[in-house]
Image (tube, rainbow, N blue to C red; front, top):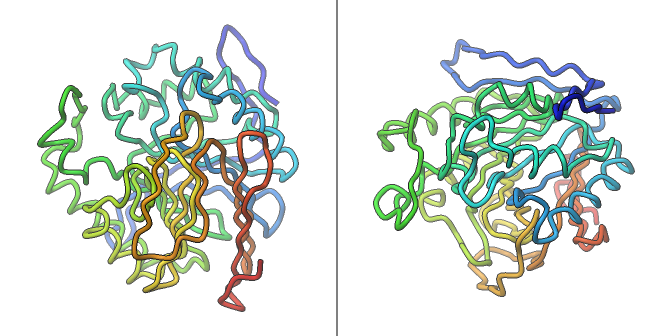
Length: 332
């Protein structure tokens, strides 16, 4: 249970999260976090994206329903798929938007767990270094944000990927926006190095389940659609390395798209606040579910089974899907 003291969250987490930079013999240089589930062999988590609007656009309602679902499921942590703070990220570590859009909204006891987060394109329009700064964990100990990293849960491995630098038009045609490319430029070198590190890490992984998390879509039938750079550069690696799920935000909806060419499934959880874009444009893959509204996603994972549930802004379960490593086909 978290308590506040002078506006700062001083939560006592029931699990110990070990964060270390591991430089493996394989040459992997992605930071690795170890977080094993409390409930033996079952991992339980929530996924939300595109949320940070100081409670507006139903963010507060989604947060409340996440708290209820988190308590019911006994979650171990939350994954954020990026666009954590609108419209233009944070201005610094002292930006009140951090507490107004995060600390003061996700107050349920069940949500006082680590939030593993990637950056979205809106986050890159502000002070990126602020979101990555450990000073934010002094304000709220739940906050865990890095550009790219590995989360090892024992049951599964999550590979978080910094997708914003992949997108060429943010560099070449930023329009009225300014992007914080510190630590990233030049683009080609950064993206090339990240792809190599990810490929090596996936190849070396012995995890039964492999999940990749990024902000941008690979496959989507909503407003942003497919991200061409990820289709060209990232998707072949995920298919070659037998990744089970690609989990993203960016499009403000909930969707499940199945690949026709591999076991890979595409899950969008970008309904944390503003939604209802009114766009549905099917692509060549199999659209299994699409909801153009606010909500979030839960995952429960055991060594043999995976279950995904999408919830709307009222907390109603509107879609359930599962698969098994033993049966190799959906069981619900």
